Image (cartoon, rainbow, N blue to C red):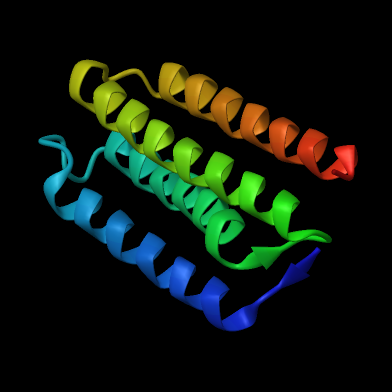
Length: 118
């Protein structure tokens, strides 16, 4: 596994811009602890998935392609899930548990793909 610094920086920049957009436009409860937690989770989920999809190369090009596709799908699913939870729930524990489980599941899938050595 190699990390490409330039594309990883671009991925972090995109993640930061998306997080700022969610912070500004995302919730009616601005300044609340729920809004802060949702903003932090957006930064974490988008950073991890975008860096995995843009800034990392693996041993083979086939493995890299599969992990990039899984990462992009996880990014879109994670952001959609986060927006839905923000719109219909104000429970911080529910938000943290669901998004934390999603991130751990994503990490497990990427680990399993990397260990398959295909």
